[in-house]
Amino acid sequence: MKKASILPMAEKGIAGRGILLDVARHRGKEWLDKGETFTHEDLMDTAVSQGCEIRPRDILLVRTGCLEYFYATPREEFYEGFKEPGLTYSRELVEWFQEMEIPNLVTDTIANEVTIHPESGVALPLHNALMRNLGVTFAEIINLATLAADCAEDRQYTFLTLRHP
Image 1 (spheres, rainbow, N blue to C red):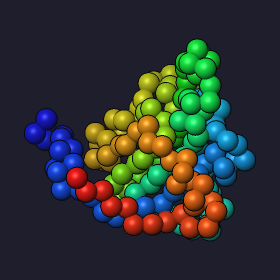
Image 2: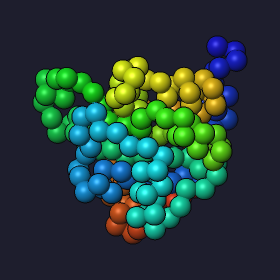
Image 3: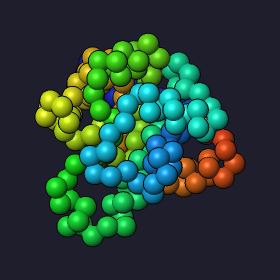
Image 4: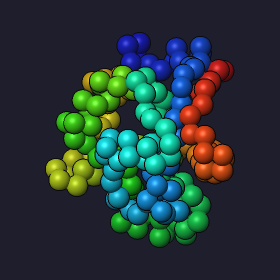
């Protein structure tokens, strides 16, 4: 993995403007439903409702509530008909990520995108489109609940993100 490794980031750390996009709260839910999708337009709507805007090169932290659902639900129920919520592939979404030069996508889901694309039936197409083609790094299964509660309390959804080993 000399060409595709994220080891340099792990060794040197990253810093940038982070923005929490609480899609679940925006939709008035504790967590999104199984297989519930959203687009880049939904991310922009969420930002507006939170009183902020997504800027070029922002590190996107997207809360769906999936991890909270995991902890609140019996294992059998969580995995029954497993289909996690998340972003759904579209050419427009990929072009938006490219135009915005989004470097990192962080979510509380297992795969950062809806498990199976609802129209094509393809599994995880954004992994190829964003990671492989654009170089967007993913962070998955990140507990965003405490951060989301704090952001909602003071209505401050943007911050300096700093990760150093």
